Image (cartoon, rainbow, N blue to C red; front, top):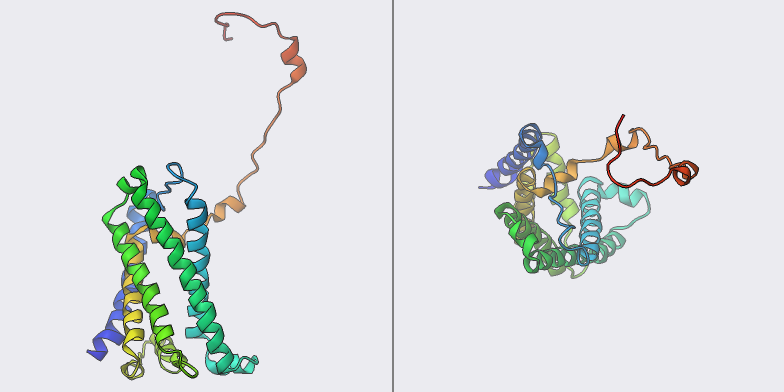
Length: 239
């Protein structure tokens, strides 16, 4: 079971993420979108969308730092483990609350705005469920192990995550991890596997061509010619 959970499932999720994204780009380019619904309702969207996107960005950065920057590097930079724990606790919790609040507003908007609700698919509902589950489990695991210096996941989960990239997963590191953290990791893997098949796939899009497109030239009309032209009624002959 340990091999299945911590050595097989991570690679299965990675295969689905990469292969599913390539398949989606190859066969569903026109569906590669968030299916914007701003036309139907914008008041709540102006608040919910920035809250969600900024929050999830902070959450992502926090995970990248916690998993892929070894403890020795942060200590060499003058950041002790206790300081890192406090920053991770308060900063991570604040980012998680901001993200969940943004999702809550988005779900409320989607449920109470008729056209937006009718455009909601089954994949959207599953995506919201798994995304909220991953965020809530992460905050729950963090807050449940706040006594003392907290749980040192950089001694277990982080080395395990890095071992996956060397194709030599150290499953023994995950055997003693608290259950809440284990569930958080598994739900996170499920979220990665779902990304190509939901609207979250738009995170891989960037308007790079916009930076290199030619300028749009606007020309004002010659007011002198317009005023000199006599207004005519009826149809005008086209040369």
